[in-house]
Length: 201
Image (cartoon, rainbow, N blue to C red):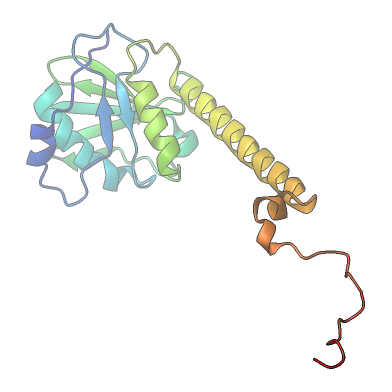
């Protein structure tokens, strides 16, 4: 069973870390879903990243005692990580766990699943993933969310490239000069007799 608990500004303000985790959780009261929120770590170093995450989640979810990951995207998986005054045990599942998901177990309350946004993700894509992961209507797996965001990014880039291409063609066909008539030079030079002053004037 999954649970959803909001990350309130008050909790965020109490985080003493100079680099608090980039984290968003589903609103309280929403229906259980495949994902309870999204976490955007700054690196793939669990020893460095987990303490700040656990420090924020412990007061909300009860003491986090175990974390599991899929080793696909984590080069080193420590067995234990000191975090928030206690030790968090770290395990891994290759076939059983979505590679884009972090599973957390609380000592007293239960289990939560977070989408792990790749550290190298562009801020705009990360923001979209965070919003989608906490949407009450969400129904995608962690990998499904990542693939959807990638398709959206690719489509946006293709649309931007297409717009740039159309503008370049338009400019090459005189569209740019049509917008700025003063910048155009005439292709034809008008040649005529130079008037001379009348005699006796």
